[in-house]
Structures are given as C-alpha cells and as structure tokens.
Length: 450
Image 1: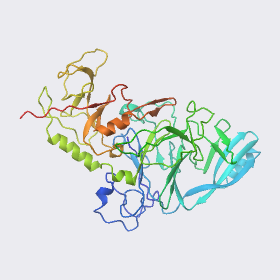
Image 2: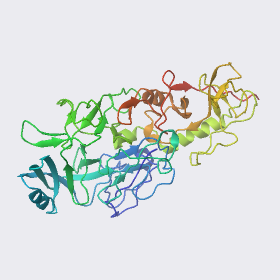
Image 3: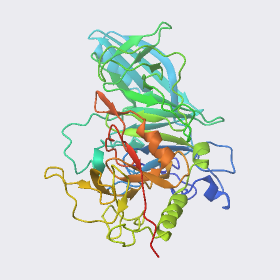
C-alpha cells in the first residue's frame, strides 16, 4: 500500500492541500494559492515535490487514511525551518553529566562507548533545512507513522505481529529549503526529548576526521535505481545509511555489530525512485519531476474504462468481464476477470478444473490445458508505482495485480528486503512474494464475439 500525509507545516495550512490524485499535469489549469508552501506538485514555482510512499498499500490503508497514518505522504515546506546540524561535542565520563547535557532542550545524539565514557554531540538549529521523521512511534516527533508490512494484502493491524522490527524512531529526512531542494536521509530519529541514544551494544565508531557515527539495530537500507525511475530503469545496489548519513555496504546480517565498508562514491541524497527499507516496511521516494512524467490516477482510471469498453469476454461462458472501480474495496465482483497465471488466459469465475486436492487455486486452463494458479485480477491503482504510462497488460504471479508491462518487469527484478536476512522480489501493490521462474505474465483477453 501507499502511505500519504499532507504537511502544511504540520497543522498550519494556509491553503487547502493538493488533491493526492493529481500530479502537475492536472494542476496546470488551476490558479496558484496565495501563499504556496508545498514542495509537491507546484508547477508555477521551481520547487521539487517530495512524495514518500509505502509499498503494499494499493491506493489506501485497509482501515482508511487517518492522521499521520496514510497511504502516502507529501512533504511540505514548513512555515519555519526545523532542521538541525551538528554543533558542540562533549566527552562525558559520568552518566549524570551525560543526562544533564541531554536535558538541555537541544537536539543531541549520545554514543555510549562504555559505562564510563559517552560522547554527546549537540545539534543546533539550521535555518536552511526542514526535517521530517519516520518511525513506528505515534509520538509527536514522528511525521510519518509506519507499521509492519504483512504480505498478501493482510492488514498489519489485524495480523498477528509478535514483535515489530521497525524502530520507533527509524529515520529522518532533511530537505533543503532552497534550490535545488536536495533531500537527504539519515538513520535514527530524535525522540520526544530531542535525543538519539546509541547504547553500548549498538554499532558505532569514530571516523578518521574525529566525528562519531553509528548504525541503528536493524539498520536503514536504501537502493537508488540506475537510470532514474523510468521505463529504462535498472535496480541498483542496496546500501546502509548511518546515523550521520554516510553510505556503507550491507552488514553480514541485518543487526550485526560490525559495519560494512564505506562507499565514498555514493551519498545519502534521495533520488526519484529511491527505495528506503526500515526492516518491516519499504518506502518509495518520488520527486515532483518524476511525478510530472508519471501516469496520474485519472490516467489509470481511463485505462480501466478503456478495457471495460472493449467488452472482453470469458472464452467459455461468453459473459462480459469488467474490472471493478478503483474506489471499491477488494471484494470480488460477479463480472471481475480471473486469469490462469501459468498461461495468461483471462476468464470469468468458474468452479471447475481443479487438478489438486491440496492446492485450491491450482486449475487447468480450458483453452490450453496448462495447470497453474487461478486468481482474480486486480488493477494496480497506485500511480506512483508505475514506471511508464503503458496499458495494464501484465499480471504479477501469484497475486494477480495488473499493471503495465514495463512496470511489472521492473518490480519483478527488484530484490526487496524480507525480514532480517532475506531478499526477494514482491508485488508493490500487496507485498506478496513473486514466483521465482515466472514473476509476471502477459494477459490474453478474449474479444467479444458479436
């Protein structure tokens, strides 16, 4: 799903938020607001739009978008800068002194080296940046509340999650308030006391230039696609981001205390299509320029209507098929198309062709006799996940979400982190792990026989 929140200075919004279904192409005919604060979708100002989305949510959260829990978040330029930057460094020998510094009301990061030594780095106000924080906590410092991703479309608030692997204060994103509006990501976020604590067991070190740095328990991983987020994109390499924003190769295991190797040629600057993994939730970063060239929600709806207007038929029952409205919940409708995912033939629903007593969705296609999964088809509604504006011709296996060919093939080759050790490709609309040999299939529709 996709998480979205609208920040007009977090509660101070001098103009109505832009409609989340629109991108700059939809806005060009509109009059600009009196005092535009948004980085997102403002074509009359040369500002970059920043959209943060969570994979798995196909357009909205299962329980609805509320407060800071939404399907996608657009970052607004704040009325007043709230960014911070490193300032004074203190080397403390007693816990009492460390606590005294941390309680001054300033932002600080504490690195506990031993029981008798702690390095506290104080941060001062930075008038040139805005800071946004992401994490599992619902406390006020968190702008974007994320929950664990459960594959297959199962809502995380209804699923049995014994222990979340997402940090309460997972990461922070710092955006420049002036051109070119660069956005950078850092591991860990400041808590309600404006502090970040790295305990004795956390991975931490002193760099050659003398400044301290460290990693969070399960880490913050980032992958920048090669070639941008376009139909020609190729997946990049997953890297880990440190508390101070340096880039490292992955640790041997997600929570190992030994850091990876420093990658000096790469930075923590977010790009269009960058993926951010928080060990339990994966986020997609989109920019205004990227969204300007991306399909809109209206475009996807037009494609749905175009398919339905062609009146595809079930080749056996000869009944007309139709994709349901993108605003409907995922309840299978009578005319909904179903497909055999081993061959791609599209049918209406029928309750025959079973070839296995143990696999309920394994059926034999009546057109070509191929045996494989038989599932309902769902249109991928989240426009931000598309790399092009092509027609929805391909379905992911085994979930049945439908999108353009190039979008399906792009996501099929992206190894997404799974748990604390594994990587595998997954459907961006529901996070279901894709089949290894055939992760997506071209759909074969039957034209009406008139």
